[in-house]
Length: 184
Image: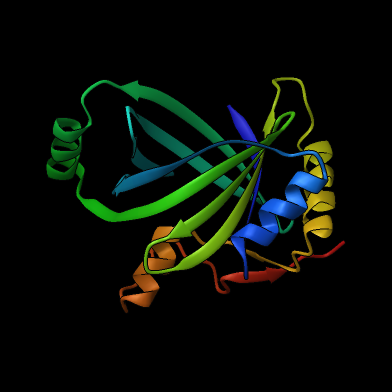
């Protein structure tokens, strides 16, 4: 699977939700997520746990201008705690990210409004690509939504990289700058 992604800081989750609703996003759900990241030689591997379900997610990202193009695979997990322990022992745990997420949807675009423990409020837009769709078309739609929401700076780092920096630890595969100005 593939998607075009954008991550950004938010001054107000409520204001972002209102602005998104005004342009056709519908609130789908709200829940707590715990993502445990593991050391792997290629891409990123995380175990995502939510109330009532869990999944193992492997993804690879590459820059698409100021946006990110991700290729990812998701496998449902029936029993997350023993898998987390096994992967930690075998691969090593990089980080754990805890957040409260509100999910809003508009066609193939997901808007995550996240309150991330120890970091603050963020938004993530993900345009899920059909097998025959163009990342450029999705990127154009994402850029339009970002403009409507008033987003002027994107964040290129993952939550766990930001948490590592805050703790003073080196951040794996961190780019030179954590924010990039959106260029229209």
